[in-house]
Length: 305
Image (cartoon, rainbow, N blue to C red; front, side):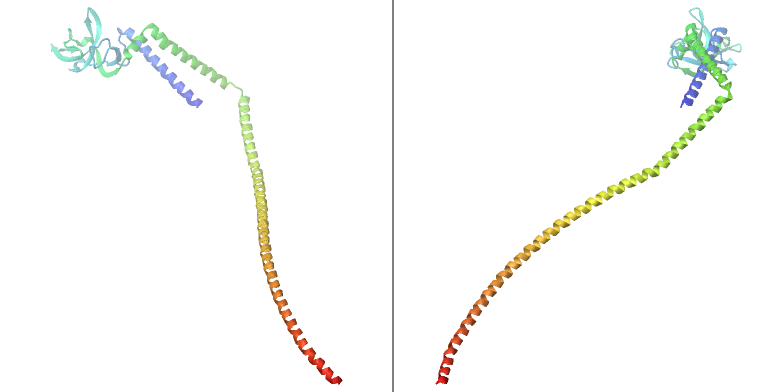
């Protein structure tokens, strides 16, 4: 992340330096060429009026290219040329609406897209600065005008360039100090890295060694929990079986008791019947004996006689 930020900052710093250099060239070339900046044949111009609106407006920046052969210009081309307005020689950028030729020399009748009449003076070949390249930057002309002032040049060019060079100087000194560091520093740094790696590996190994112990402890905990649950379940089963057995015994006792009572009643009934039968038998036997006794007595008396 830090490396990416550093690279981005360096790119922005170099872009700022390139921009500052371009503006410097524009400013100084304009001072040497009657206020017209020329960079490799291309000239940035600030639009001073709305005469060409809506093609471009006041405050826009347009790029004009130097014309090698003015005879190649034709109707509908937009050109920048020197002209006289209110008694002053100024730059003007209008569209060619007519080409005139006299004695083999061409002149160009121009008009602004926002104007209803042609310009008072035609543009002669010697007055032509360049041809518009159809390139414009809306509102940037005001920025260029500000940069051309002493205040703007100092704030936007001198200060940023000074900061850039100070930053580059700092980087150079830091690099120089880094190069002059003793080799022991590099060795110490390597040693620190090696120790850090060894400590890391030892820590990982320790963690790996503690893993089986932790697993065993977890297994023991699980076994204890399962054993407790089994014991509790066994006790519950025992209590349940005991309760059920006691209930069954009570039910058997009640059933046996009912059976014994019924049997006793039956025995009593049988005993009563048997007693009645015995009494009847005894009575009958007594009667038989009584009937037999008199006969015996009579027989005895007869014998005695």
